[in-house]
Image (cartoon, rainbow, N blue to C red; front, side):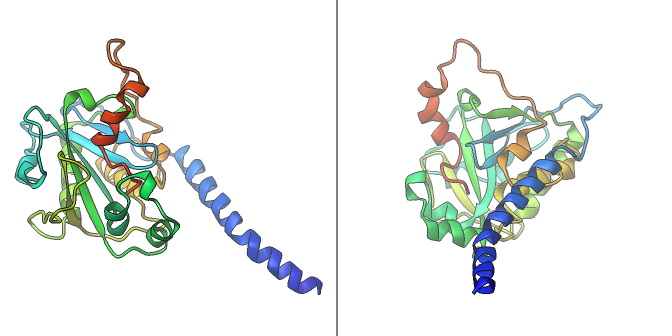
Length: 247
């Protein structure tokens, strides 16, 4: 009788042990970062944004270094504001992105489905005004070579030479979804995509980034000017600025 009870206890404790080991690995590797601060002056105004779970890379929509409108035409979104200066780009599970536009849409089925083998991935692109760069935003100081590398990281995620939009898929008037390479799972999350790009560019970041805090830990947060509204007053804007689901 004791042996079956021991097997049952082990079976019940195994998921908890796995979760603890997963969290411990993520936390320990955060303290052993890859990359370093570049000696070159920042050449591009770039950022990392987070909704508390999911991270996006944020770049100037157009600059002397690269024109993102040539890759992701603003016309793919329903109504990009004429004063949008930045583009936020994130990677995530296809089904989760499309089926979970808000936390209210989260179900156990789509969460488990994403974690244990997805049916593909998408890039989510959102056009941002400068005023939306507040709240959960971190500076991303990039030299010209580092920025070129991050551009290549995004372009390499596309399945071909042209970005392919997903017809009718939007969270709001300022965003669009595009087909992407890869599959989302426990070891390959939206944040590992962000972190891998930063490591590839030589930015100081955790060696494994399954969570948003792994990505932003070594970055400097953007300070909100005193004249701007409080977080409670900007919550509506922030929810439109980047994916409302984990991705």
